[in-house]
Image (tube, rainbow, N blue to C red; front, side, top):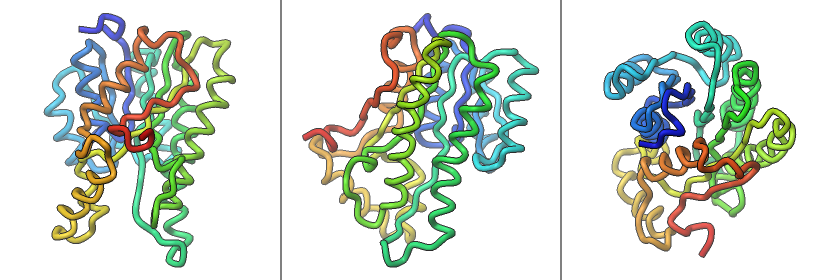
Length: 250
């Protein structure tokens, strides 16, 4: 067990499935108490049932400031502190340049940027000195991605925000870092594929872009988040850790 996370208080946004759920489980295995948020109550309840008694689920829409405030009010009421924020809630969908709509742009930036900004802001009053903020980025932020330009732009904004916040929060001893996954096999791919028949070809295509010739697993991203949250990463801030099987490096 990583004793540096023993009894830490952690918030994982977008924690009811995929990378968020795997990371919440990893934090609990390392001794932390974890709050997870999600938009859909049934999925959130199912996630908490699998995580056990050291997890609390809080229904919250990542773009709702009222929901965000309620989340931090609950954590303050329960513990009066927060040691780690993993801002993972995100949204993605395809959109070619000629097909981009206002709704598509707003959905992407409202969740991936606006919601993230106010989640980090809301955490600050509770964040202890020496705390850790980890943001979910993406390798597409620095690569051309056909029909994915708005999502890529939103994740480029996340990377930029992390740099600025790392400077702003250094005097408080709060570290801010980004984990940027490559193609990861998560339930969200079903929505991206659209028709069920498209899912297998999509996964095959994504795996073909990875030098390791496979998609990543959610737990492989979770291990990277856990490292950045721990005292083992005490001299790391403003950094981006890619978890992509070499897709953005080779």
